Image 1 (cartoon, rainbow, N blue to C red):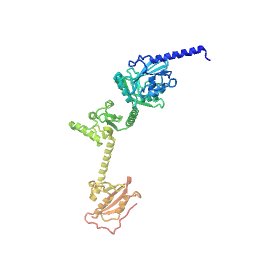
Image 2 (image 1 turned 45 degrees about the vertical axis):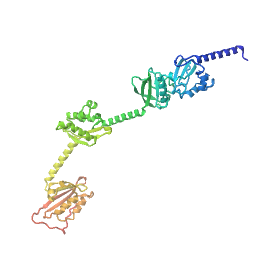
Image 3 (image 1 turned 120 degrees about the vertical axis):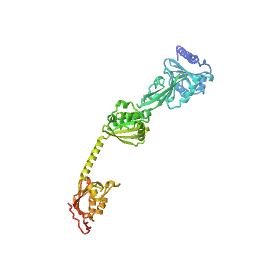
Image 4 (image 1 turned 180 degrees about the vertical axis):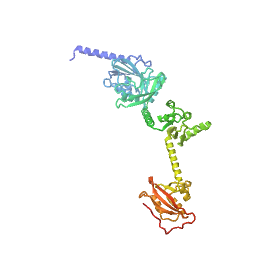
Length: 506
């Protein structure tokens, strides 16, 4: 049984709450000039700490909700498709107002939210077409277009206050700042000094860094932002830089000078060996000289052959570059200093051209010395009276002296094809008597076993008596020497078909 004092207290509380609710429904908003005095047709909801306390009849026609049963989230679920920035939770502390625009013109076009000490008032406004400013109308249309975009889009004031964002922005914000609301923590710091900037964010769950290209445009005094994910581009750039660094470290170990010119003809890459070989200063090469300037400096420092006619110099360089583009340039530069460079030009991707400069002075000197020794050995053997011929392990004639060529009346240097042991035996048969040992000589030259010196007698058709000495030498080669024992000038010796040649093997 309630006491009279308790009944009076309960009635007092009900009267106070009813008066407060009536005041919140009927007091106009001072923050929105477009809002009208509330009346029977106003669509107003009143929440106390997120629980619906009252809804006007017009509001019930818009979104039917039951006081004391439905909450803030129920209203948001019904209207968030048109008012995408409707807060997820009401403000429970302080006081203030917030005006939101719909993303289309179908139905109420604005919401005015006011709050104070846990009480929240949501007022839907139906602005007439002539009452909607052009800026708001454009914003409504733009919000409708950008709400379906997969890239984050948002709008701020010049002071950095967040006005609007699309679902993609909200999803990204939830991954980066899962414990902060969208309104309290901006994803990207506003930057109005540059219309585009590259920003990185780190996913709070995976820890993975993501990169975005943030751009903005100012429209009607507001800053409209968009963020394009460029993580793949940044990773590709990092991979390219790492690859170039790896190539640079590799090229730094090469003894061959390397100069790579880009499609515009400027030096893009060089290695230390190029500095050592050409004598060009690293400062000059680091300044990325043009290709023509590079070769001009080589000519000035006498690191390339001096042109006989300078007027044709530019044409010659142009032809050099064209040949390098086709991969055809390969030349030997003999310098006044005694150095010898081998220069190759090779095409590279994206229109670039690479030049490789190799110092082959030692190789050229060795080759020249080797040739000199060969000429000396040739001269020495040409002084001998015995005919000498050397055949390789495959039976190819590699050397013969003057006495051999005179004896058999042959000149191997005039032959376009290689002279074999079989060809040489045919020459011998034309001037010598028949000898069954010719085939033995051919087999010995092509054999790699039982290699011991041996000799046979040979008789020329003019009666001259010779000894043929067959001796194995290095690398499987065979030296054949014809020594004249007795020379006959008058009587020709007949063919000795019945004679048995004297075999002196071993």
